[in-house]
Amino acid sequence: MNSNKELIETLDQSLSYQEFEKAFSETTGLPLTLRPAEVWQLVQQGKDRQNGFCRLMELTNKACANCLSMQQELCNSAFEETKTETCNFGICETAVPVKQGDRLIGFLQTGQVFLDEPTEEGFEQALDQLKKWGIKNSREELRRLYFATPVISRERYRYMLDLLKIYAKQLSSMANQMIVEQETREPPMITHAKRYIQEHQEEELSLSKVARKVNASTFYFCKLFKKATGMNFTEYVSRIRIEKAKNLLMNLNLRISEIGYEVGFQSLTHFNRVFKKIVGHSPTQYRQHLKSI
Image (cartoon, rainbow, N blue to C red; front, side, top):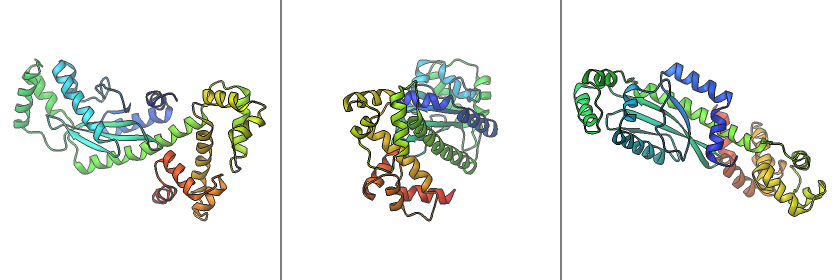
């Protein structure tokens, strides 16, 4: 994929994500959005489950700017781990990072809920702020929307976020697989080369060696391979090997060093470094996670 935005858009349109979003929203009553890391917008805008009170922030520039600023702060703080921020009105929103290896590509975002019961005092303060921002809806309507905001216990909300954390890892795997398996009308030469890499991944592979196998000059093959796959030769081979290593790590009888050599790495240090770069965790941490599932 050419960008984080393109990759997230592809994941967002996948059947897996569409089904998960529907199930999550139907079960929890909350909106859910999969968004790229770099997008500057009101995240839940247009969602069926969008909080009616939060929808008011779309009505004036001042209210919208304040909401966008809060969204930006949330995503800045959620770069490494799940974070929850509370807006001026006591309403909470949460961002769960989605990564492709160690690279942040987007967030699963939900919330627009109270974690404590709203009060009349809180409503009066909200009313004053909304007036300052130029929102002119009637007091009765604003009160109805304010107190219609879902109230969820902190414990229940934490369990909801645990579901999103688990699914964020699945999205990470899907993103990695998309990059490895992306095939967009590639030339037969590239198809042949990818098949050769797949069948000989445990061997020492070089750009020049594979170029010879497909009867191409190293320079031409390098250029064509990058154009067809979106990544250089070394990165592609590494991803193929790491995908196989992830499967082998499920076999607890195999030592990590054995797996590294089995998939084609010449040293354990190199295997550990590449695995962490692509997956986001060391092989040991990845195996421990598998044990806990």
